[in-house]
Length: 130
Length: 174
Length: 98
Image (tube, rainbow over all chains, first blue to last red; front, side):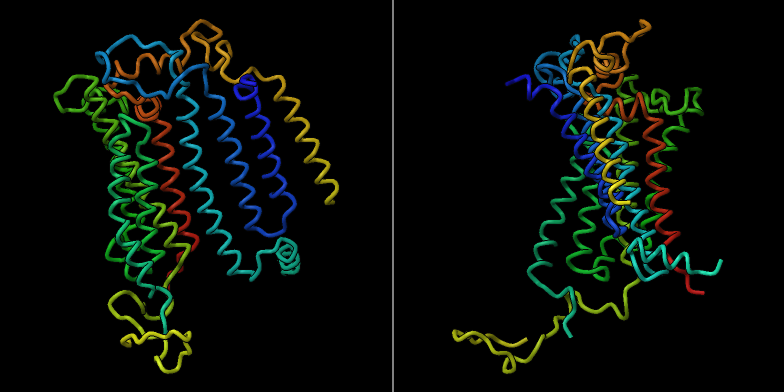
């Protein structure tokens, strides 16, 4: 049973989340719901990266300097892989910025066309004289 | 007419909690060296404290905490602190963003410690100001005179026009 | 059109689940991110960062040292991205009164 929790169930769960987010982007008609689907896709990918940064019996990548002297020899297999955490910090902040800009664009779309429904938007955009 | 932001309980709770949120955000920024944390996390919490006041009291009363016009200039100041820390060391012959060249007179690892703290502060300021600026731009210009707030309590209706429950207790009006 | 979309989604989900079965185990010590040395013999980036973070920067938190010292250029780029997002919102939404 312990192999199940240590193993690849996390990847299956994040893949399912990714497909749910893609479903929201492709099938929903409201633009805000598509944006929420985009956020779900981003959350799934970040979770997959962070879930892959584990080692057996490893601890958080923060050195404990209170016990012994500070500069003891550090064994790299005692600590988690810090690199995916670093990269995903960047990804989270970029996702927040992207969501903010997407909301600004949605507001200006609503001001221009009066609707946020995809089908009505396409009709109005086709009907405009170019 | 009753303004949207006249609920005294919500306003009092938000004003009570906000200094602790800001203190904890500063703690997270400064203790990014010793525990999980750092610039981005602390900056997001600082922005949350600004947005709490804006959501509970109103943008008009929140101008005394963080004004609308401060959003983009303050975020550019944070980015310039980061770039400045990287460019100063180039005048002393080191590579770009190599903190060992900071002219502070400490040993190399301690100089890197100081350099990391400086750029984390810049990043926190930028993230907090940008998130608040995005919220202010999404909300837009306030409609009409900025009514409401805590200095002018408005009365919803006169006491004798409202039908209360049978156990109506006599309060003072207004 | 909707049926085609659902078929594509199910096929993509099947492809993902098939691919996950061929990925190394989570936390396996011989997978490329966790190995001590990379395939060409140079030290692995993550192992180097964990072992040398305190010696180089006097800071116990290895994630912060990686983010702000070893990979500080990426953090600079990301700060500029956040600032650019704020500027983009301002440019799209602020209407100046002529």
